[in-house]
Length: 391
Image 1: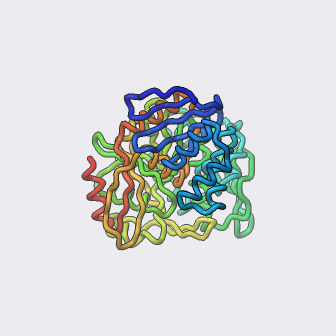
Image 2: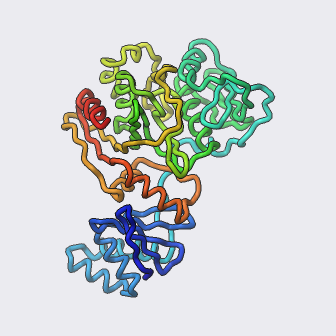
Image 3: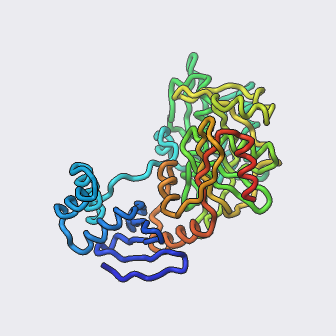
């Protein structure tokens, strides 16, 4: 096993027998195993560390399984756990984190650029976008949602989106590639907005993207990664009503090195379960049309007023993992770096390319540098007060 060196950032870095692996060992007997060539990161608890160090010392699988059984594990559980770590020890991949918006695989096949000679109407991250084929109320709503992204100077269009009617349904074409056919009218706006976000972040400069909301005020910027249904959009709408600026509601895109947030203020999507909560604070939500995602979830899109849209690229100052639980008390629980990585994996993230040793160290230093919390809430006003108290 390689030598351990103490880091001023409260972890020790260990080089493993396999040169494609490195271990970051934190106080409290937690660790992160980094697969260098793929960029994958695996959290290890104290038991995982014990197994890992034993494997590095050459102790066999059968002995380790017996040790775990003596500690109270069943033999099948012990065998599965040890063999998973053996696979990692041998450099095999267990399970990759899910990419953001995994329900939109067709957007990954869209050609990166089109031959459109027109200037873009909107800029989302680094992507110039034109949208055609829609009119009336739907066009007005889409224009309102994309207003913070309106182009103010000449910019080539990288993404040409066309909507074609076919009887009572629609076809959505992106750069001459059909991403969806037979789309119902009620599904059209969610498909367009989700696709615009997906295409834009995949074709823009960034280091890491999270399924997250991000919102800021003064010198404070909260990054809130969460799985769908955790309340991040509800919190974003509530804080926006209190004067906070919106960076994003769905995909948080972070630059490399300083991990600063890039604005992506493409509306705040409020699902039907949260309408009653948000309507009491944002009365205009009642006027927003009802749409439906293709999975059947009803949703309204709250436009982000231009004055409420973040414009500066700045680093997050707090990391908060929200979890709405009806009737629960509002609690902010500090998290270790390893616990934070577990939360990241539950909420989905996407690393654009392997971080490498230097990039991994920068990522950990960034995580260490900011406060990290698990945030459970059951009352919106109490939740908003708690988040504002962080700043």
